[in-house]
Length: 337
Ligand code: TXA
Ligand code: MG
View 1 (cartoon, helix red, strand yellow):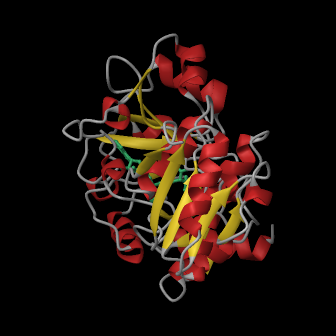
View 2: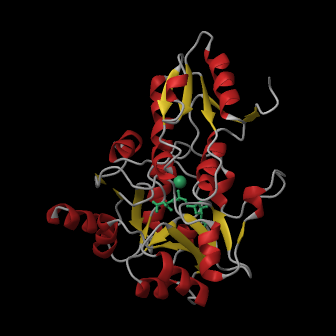
């Protein structure tokens, strides 16, 4: 961390400007959260609809207390267990938070990241940094400073490079304004981990229902996110059948991308094969997912077939992002011979 760089970054935020910065989940595009003008600049730089609210990043509990109507007991317990870290809480906002930051909502999303550069930037930038993922709206979230540069070059004055992030999927969002604490976006902190602290918690029905009439409550979850340019399909079933199905699809003219793991990478003789990680370590899969989707955009493949990563724990969050990237296209090969 360079003292002069951090000082300039803090000044830029305090003057209403934007700074991209690393967090443990993905890179964020930061602006002062109490400045509606800065929020407008964030939406503009991302090309994001302004009804999609931003997460306010804080560096200590006192700053949380100053922007919400109250800090419920559940929020204190979750903060105790998971902050600083990859958890965002939805609480009732007070008058300090402009509607420009919350997309017109009476609630505000708050998170305390654990990344050292992020915490230092928040402190120097005035204590409240609104930050969505630092990608152009619709592209995979950035997990390196280079990804941010690809999307934001010429649009923002500064990117802080903290190297590749460690988790690679956006934070878990828990809504604490409902009677039962509800997960609006799955992430590294799983439903089971939240239940272990609070006793009761559930998944938003809009996330798990196949009925498209049930809308997710986090406005951002309704958009088709993380979309690669190629047509992406997820292949599910016993591993041997998955491998042979994908090999059949790859055996044709035109470039076909394949997302596989260490365990299977030697079994795909054709296609643009990308190994995402190992099934022995789910974090290795999570942390490479968005980078792999970006690489396929550069390679210019026409179609992508991905193995499925269904598993307890992090698998929920990985599949949530992958399914969204695929526009929910799944192929079940269990009954194929
Ligand atoms: O890990 C993360 O959370 C990253 C890093 C930079 O901290 N940030 C991030 O922000 O993912 P973004 O803007 O890409 O996603 C924020 C999500 C959106 O789906 C948004 O709709 C939802 O949070 N959200 C924000 N405020 C909300 C609120 N008051 N009520 C419901 N959903 C909210
Ligand atoms: Mg995002």
